[in-house]
Image (cartoon, rainbow, N blue to C red; front, side, top):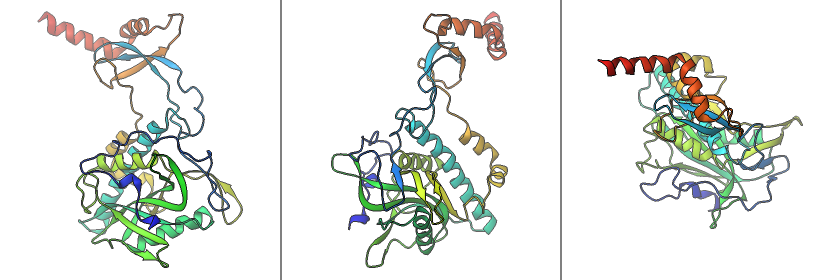
Length: 328
């Protein structure tokens, strides 16, 4: 059946989420018009944001090397930054799903719960996006998923590795389940498919074992999701849509961010923190920006690094400790 498989999961044993590399440029004309109301594109099909690619002078606080890095706009439309955007979104969504599942299980007094990966697939019938999502949530509840997140995929990967529309909607759902999950099923003479995806690392149906695996899965799904640029709802209002949406007991009106941050503040700080630039010499992420790079050499990295060493308290204290150890 057309809706019963997904190229993103037809992977060999032992493979990881990013072994397929970057999604190739799709064969479609830049905008897919499913139904009568949606306007959908792929991540990375737009233009870079303001300031993206501008060089900056950096300093590694671990080894002392000055080097050049470049600003990243972190936009999902940017051809250079969409993978960084997907990874950042994957971090925060993975934290919310993992921490939220733990908190909900604790409040309900249920020790055994799973976060499973499933696909809901059905033909494009020209319905508004809100109605399509409502249908997905209903199907998930009927199959034992009490809450979670979904990522919209209106494209499939063909034999040439290109992402093209095939007339079907696919929603990748990562949901919270208590007890057993109905393994699959068909609805309305087979036009809808619900399929539980085996774990990519352990090749079983017990769900995700670690937040790291969960984060990687979400990030991979976001690299080739459908970006809804225009959705005409039932009331006639045109809206943009988030790439990740939540439902059930993990929806924002059921589990607010404040409550979740209070229950897991350290995890939120790590997940929401922007990724620091890695030093090209020692690989450390203890790096700081010391100025904008200028081609005339006035803010050359080596010059900026020398100025920074003399003014930055952290560096000065580190130098004092090293001098004390060497003299003793």
